[in-house]
Length: 392
Ligand code: GAF
Image 1 (cartoon, rainbow, N blue to C red):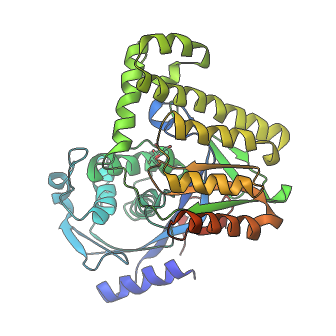
Image 2: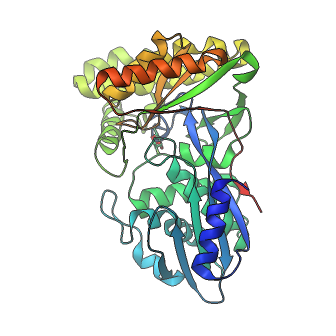
Image 3: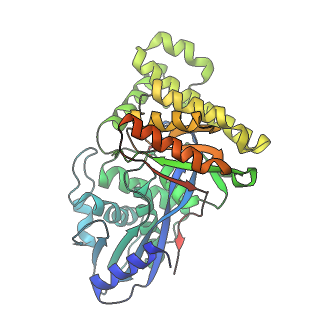
């Protein structure tokens, strides 16, 4: 039993006085490369991480749904037939229930819209995915809940359909205007593999990361600067991309290539152009990373990771000083590549480093944070891990 499994089971028993029907879990993710490309119908290359969210779930003999979690004091209970009046919230507005509860309740609602139905349930959630670190703690809640209800309600939805359910909960119940990368990574993750996803077709291929086999480690550098995608910069970036696509006369920036950039520069203001240039070049970097990983292995992708970070810092402007410091300190200490990962405005960066250098790079990043007067970062290594499944 993992700590999260123990906590979810204990919370469930304390809440209900009976044993759950089962435990389901789903992981957080790191994105190796391809940032903000998902909602532009582009390419991403995330992998699921070993940190998981666990949902202990039991059926009730009425039509009500009750959710509790170790990160909130009070449980929330509503009728399954009330979900339709609770959601959707307007994007950017406050959910009608506490935000944490909008994730599992939003999943139940989105499953109903996908045709699923069933008896009432009690759900107790515990997690070891760091919250607000850009590691998709929200997709992990969605994936664990969706997997449990899909089984208990005998809905028969496949993993891609469950990822869509999670995204709908996130977009319309929670009000965060995100793409589908995180839910797909959490549902489709495989040990040792990254998920190369075409966000237009939702076709996914696994790509061996092979870091460990090459003597490399992937270090997560959580700056502990909290971010949220239901407010502010994330939605603004999305709007800039839509504006850029409209100026180029295409439905999404997926249809703009690197060769089109000179024309884009002539047609739009500087800020919009730089947002567009990030997306267009990032899509190309994902394709290049997949090719290089397959042909040459992880040791050869460093420059692509470094270029991706520079593009997010300078063109998309979603980095923060703590992320830049983590990336620069890791590179100065010998990392092969490093970049911020996830939506930005806080959260985590990753560094691809020699396994033998984990302690030295970690010490260098901690020193750089102390020198800059930042709070201590949270540093740990990850390997690609399995996606959502039933645990027990
Ligand atoms: C967040 C979002 F949830 C994803 O959909 C994606 O846009 C990412 O930011 C940026 O690549 O994690």
